[in-house]
Length: 116
Image (tube, rainbow, N blue to C red; front, side):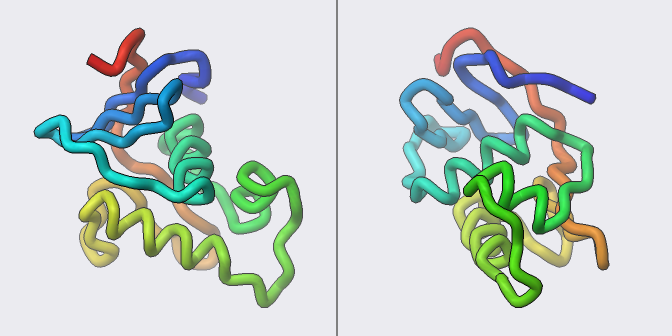
C-alpha cells in the first residue's frame, strides 16, 4: 500500500494537487476549481492509489459516515471529479469503476515536496 499523505503536492498524469493550498493544477499550471467534497474525494483516492474503495469506505473517509443503500452522493462526486480531470468513464486514465466493488485510482501518484 502506497502512503503519500505527508507530501505537500501529489502529481499524477498531467495533474498536480497542492495539498497545502488545496489547488488542482493542470499541465499548463492552470488552476481547476474543486468543491470541498471533490477535494476530499480526490485526496482519499490519491492517498490510496491502485486500491479498490467501495462507497462505504469513500463516504466514511470523506464525510465520516456510512453509506445508505440508496445514497448516490459518491457516484455524483466521482462523476464531477472525472469531468474536472477530463477523464472518460469508458476509458479512464485516473478513476476506474470496478463493477459491484467501487472505484480505484489507477494512475501512479508521485509525492512532491512543493507544488512547483
